[in-house]
Image (cartoon, rainbow, N blue to C red; front, top):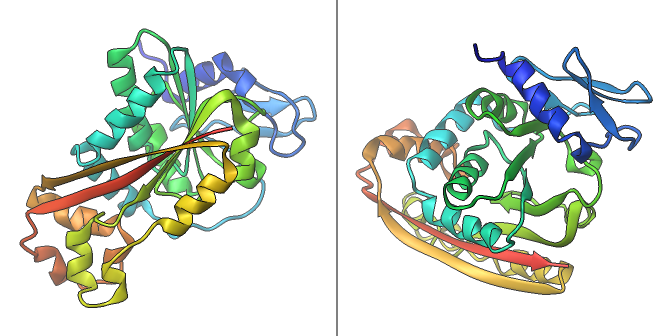
Length: 285
């Protein structure tokens, strides 16, 4: 008989307990028999029935709700981002070691789960996947849908991880905290940040922002800031225009800020293809 999700997650977290540091005092943590993650100073964080743990030490609000993460999961699992997942998987395989990977701003976990699946299909080395996000609804969905991974509600400003814990840190279309990335990264590790390139979702921008400055996009400032933080930087561009199933169009709009304030009749557009145009920034200390 399969173990309850909460117990299975507790066992997996216990196997990887060396990753954890108390977000309150910084001490090492263990996983208790009653499915909590706790330190010797009695700071304790319960593992929820969905298999995630909430490490937040202060109140926080997120503009992202359950519907957005459900839409995001369906869009990502459709394969629109598969070229990006393959490129990241290839970078991780080149490390030629067992990897612990932290996805910061992981949402409902679909990117990390897809990358882990590809990695395990192609490599005999182990992959420990950890996702953190301040949005509780995203982490609840991650815990519900993806097993054998560690899902944490948390703030990178007070992250629940030991220094030098991860071989790679992913930061996919999400704000960065470079100070914390550097603390958490193992020697010879990689920070892999994904940012939009000029053609990213250009079909949606043409619909919503025609003849305005928002119709074009530049990531120049983001790339420059990334380069300021790492001694070695490589940039890989992933670009592809893909046919899109019409049922995915309203979901893609829902997961994208461009569509949040648009009238519902825009969802009936005859959009048949979408451009995924991304820069993968690879930073080494």
